[in-house]
Structure formats: structure tokens, C-alpha cells
Image (cartoon, rainbow, N blue to C red; front, side):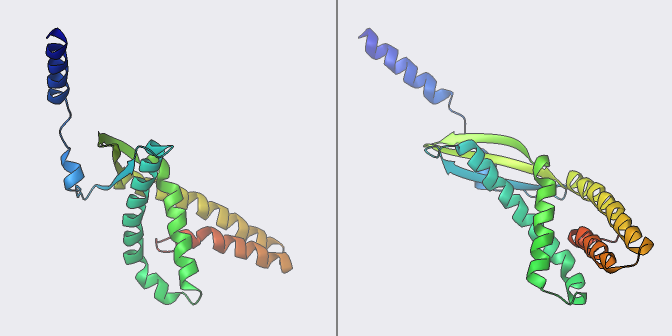
Length: 174
């Protein structure tokens, strides 16, 4: 009798203290200030927390990719080269820049599934883009200066390096 009562009390406490399903699982938030990523993975996955974080970051990256795509259409029309390669270079560079700034807002576990809710603030993203762009411009100017000092066959290599530095930021005013 006592065992049944103890089991009943433990089950009641476990049911009462179960965390309710967060709203972000059923409806992804939308904001002008941030991009959000939501992902779920089975907890049987070896590194399920990292896998979920990676998937959520990829979801944010896809939103940024759409943003880049819409802002770059005019620039692409002016470029006379392989557009797919050009576009991929910009997207990869941008994703590399923003990865450290993604923050985990919440996690939830249910039925052996692990959910993660992440955010990237647009302000932080654009601040990092600006800093990276300034660094790239400085490097490109150094290459152009080297090319200008000693005009030779090596000058073309310096100019090529300068161009490859600024290519990921070509859709922003330099």
C-alpha cells in the first residue's frame, strides 16, 4: 500500500512539474531586429545538442541568404562572370562572419526529441559585416599599393588578390 502511494505521489509530481510546450515550437517568432532559428533532433544522435544548434544556425543562414539574394540582384546584373560562384562566395563569407554571434534562447525536450531556439541580432550581424569590410578594404588597398609601386607581372597577382578580398562585400558600398 505504501509503495503504491509513493509511486502515485512521484508520478503526480512528475506530471505537475513538466515544462509546457513553448510557443516558439508551434509558431516561429518574426522580428525586424533579429533572425530566429529553430531545430529539433532525436536525442539518439551522438552529439544531439550540437547537431540541433548547427541546424538552427543553418536556418538563420538561409534567412540571411534570402536577404543577400534580394540585396544583390542589382549588383549581379553588372557582373560579367560566373554568377553562381560569385553568389556562393558571398553567402559563405557572410555565414562564417555571423556564426559566433548566434545565441541560444531556449531548449525543450519531449519524446526523445531535443529542440533548440536560437537568435542572431541583425545589429550584431551588420556590425561584424562593417568591421570585416573595413579590414578587407585596408588589405585590398595594401595590395593595390603594392601593385602600383612596382608595375610588373606580379602587379596582376596583387590586383587579383585585392579583388578576391572585396568580392564578398561587393553588394555593400565600399
